[in-house]
Image (tube, rainbow, N blue to C red):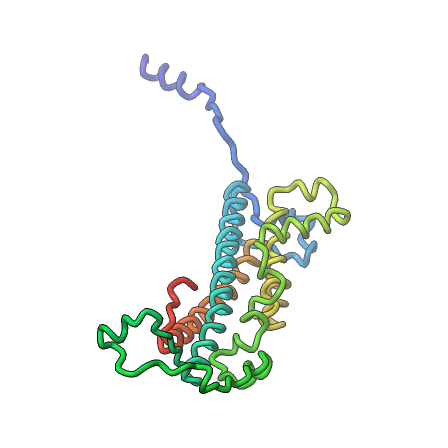
Amino acid sequence: ALEEEEEEEEDDEVAVVLGQFDLLLDDSSVLSNDESTKYGGEVTKSRASSMHAITELYRCANKVFRLHEERKKLVAGLRAAEMRVRLGQKASAEECFVEFEDCDGLGLISGMIDEPMVDVEEEPKTVPQPLPISEEIETAPIRSRLETLENYGLGSYGILSTIPDLTEQLMTKLEPYYSPEHREREEYEAEVASFVVLKSLEAYASTEEVAKALVVPSSATQRLELAYEMMMQHRDELIELVEMISRELMDCGEECTDLW
């Protein structure tokens, strides 16, 4: 009897709810049954809590930001390496020899110099005029298709700035077009950054790839993932070009460890 009474008391105890969580879509497009036709009725199947969705969004954005900085470093090194290669090739083609005057006669004493030095002024040398930069580019062999693109495919939009700086600038321009409630959302900055990233890829990616990244994704996270794939492809091509120019620099006797 006592056991039955204890079981009844346990059944009467009220459960205490310590926490309650609701699952949300990462693109904030939860549709009710009566709104199934809204936005074409398309709802993403990847459900996550709002905290996990925001974390994933900015994790993806940060890796895109870092990859953009890596591309900038590679392009800056390629531009400097190209000039070193040209100077090295010119020096080897002209076969320039510099003669130094033995002012104190140490060379004669040590026997290193058997004949007196010839005055350079007695035999003037004709120095060939350098070609204009435009003609040098035309005569230089094309190693990669990146050399035909602006700044090796990086373009001019993001070559001097970081993605966060460009995002902040664009957010200032868009401020009159969005309400304060919309701009105060946690994901707003990452959404704007996703469009800035695509703008920085216009010089490299094709029109079809940029259009696909703008239209197909249903969230900023997916848009950033597509941009990250294009950036990775661009970085791999830059690294291949770096290896080719590095070999040319070593053939010219130049060091290239400080460029990359």
